[in-house]
Image 1 (cartoon, rainbow, N blue to C red):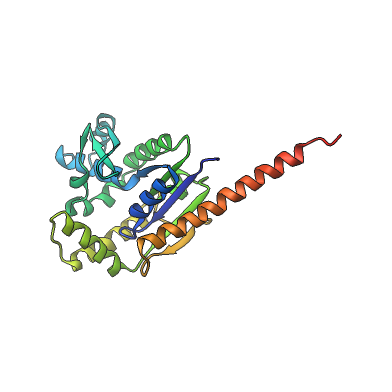
Image 2 (image 1 turned 45 degrees about the vertical axis):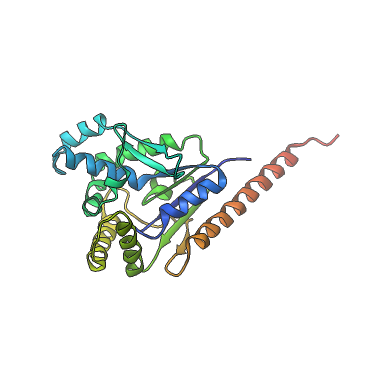
Length: 242
């Protein structure tokens, strides 16, 4: 069966990553968390005391750092590795969330990450979630989903995720962070967050994860059927009747 690219874009804490992981597992596709890559860059810059306006040093850092994903056999999750070390928990901290939109708006960072993401998905058979997958990274993705949700609902979900990791943050602080990130992501010059013209809108405010996954899988099934039918028609059209 033909393999495709599934692009899931949208705002923070809409359930993009959880949905994308489940869809990838269901299809046997690779899952690439592009947001984690920008978080890794943010962590690297902070740990190496590199200012966000020091563009020459940032470009050097992008050549020095190595970002990859490693599958955790116990949990089944893909975990981000920075320079060979798993840093999944560190990149999810609130201090990273507060700065990642600023870092991801730096053109050199954006260009480097997009190039790496395109290499990762070159053979297709991938599910990617992020902010600009359907518009910049893979504008030719066969299935595009744009996710949104009420900001308070998103903040409550994010608060629960942080609490599991032992980080207690007031929901009001998270709401403020999300609104700031929404603004920065949507107004940046380089690959702004926006819905692709051919992306299907998915509002997850009142949806469970299973419902979100089913929504995406239904679109994938419809696309695969359409592609198979098109291929059959092309073959039949090329047949020579004697």
